[in-house]
Length: 232
Image (cartoon, rainbow, N blue to C red; front, top):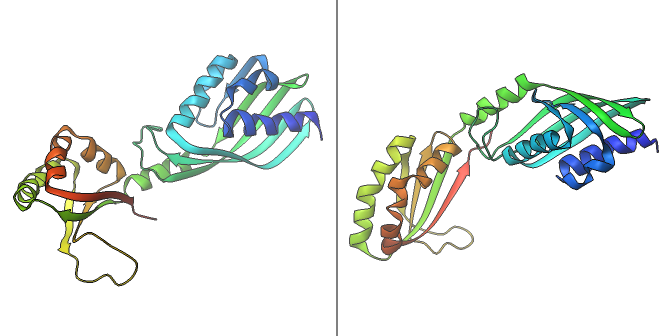
């Protein structure tokens, strides 16, 4: 296999997918320069490492897929697709837990057998559209409940609504178990709450107002509380 091709594949497999920064000296020239698909420019191993860290902090399970590769020494051209789970602030958008995917093209320049420069152009318009759409997808919190103290449960119910309002949360359903039609379900009651998006769920659950109610909730009932992101 051509050595330049091997280095490009290692660049994505080790430095990006595996997030293995110790492999940089074997792949990158000491005066390496980089322009990423998100538009940022970095210089040197340290600058590039900061960019890689930033992307991995924002996107879980981040992957780079080489769709096509053309070698014409001392340059290599790669047609790429990039993807990850949106878990942190990214391009000004709060995390939703949804997967985003975008395309890009990368031009590699080599000095000897090491990458001296990478210039990447990404389809940021398509990426931004995905991020916007994901922000508009509703999210749900489902509580499977078995009440252990009626008085404290009534107190909890009277207070929890005020914690939902600042984050756009609204009660969709509250009811008691009638029959289990399949599988097993040990709890007696269920609650479904809808939020504008997953970030609103996280903001509500982490808010001081709701965190202050958790001790009361634990005294009132046994609850399995689960959040869900609506599919496209």
